[in-house]
Image (cartoon, rainbow, N blue to C red):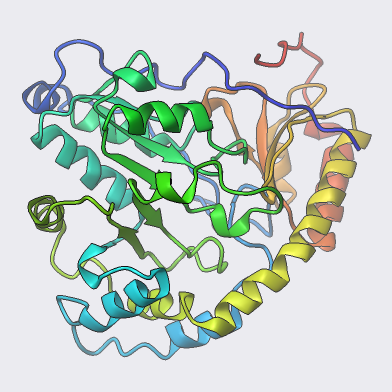
Length: 372
């Protein structure tokens, strides 16, 4: 069962970002025009797909313990605006001082907040993964941040280990270049709990110098609960922490998000998560076999999700009509490729039947070479 390594392509959806006239003032002029749409996996205007391969959420979820905590959350009152108890719990779990814990409405909210903070500090030449989560480039565009020609030239940046859509480890050389340059870096760890093989691309010492972003709702199969937190770098100054806190709204996390994050660091939750990884690995292997048997090119990944290219173009609408949804990867800069996640056997059977149906593919078109 051979999978190919899909190297990062030179094409990026939406272009490489602003290169001239960047900065907050320029951004205020540009953002009056519509920015490109931000497609996502998961439910859409047609509702929740019966067989959803487009989402990166843990298909074994929801985590029973976390779900029970969310359901029991008291929503009649505001949370503590300082989130004192939650910060302490998260800090204890990571072995840091509570002052180093910042809370966010979601991973996406933090990405935008970090971009705003960079713009305010004049850090207008930045780096982000390509291909990668579209909100990095979106946040840069909103705040007038230009993409640096290389990580060593960046004044700030985002990394993701492992990343989406490829599910591959972050480039260790890129991380080293960014951190050596002294750039503030957000390290997105959304998929780290779902790593099926290998270890972290960044060393523990390198991670300690990053703004480490944790958004555990994917790992817990509870993506409808929006909540995230950040562990600030060891060297973060009180003024920097205060600036980033000031850029957040009051009560960024509701009662259900507080319950989710509190449950995340409890032993029963972590035991459940570890127990799901073997199942996800089996489901992923079956997915790879199903796709390769139908002539798909499958890119290697270390996560339950992967990118694959069919032997001929797909009709997404025809698949959706059969209750199957995949995540088209063109918006990531990978035209012709699709992101799929490991799903239970009954979902995989539905996918196989949908792919084998005549309406799943239009007439054969010339194929592009795999990005190198």
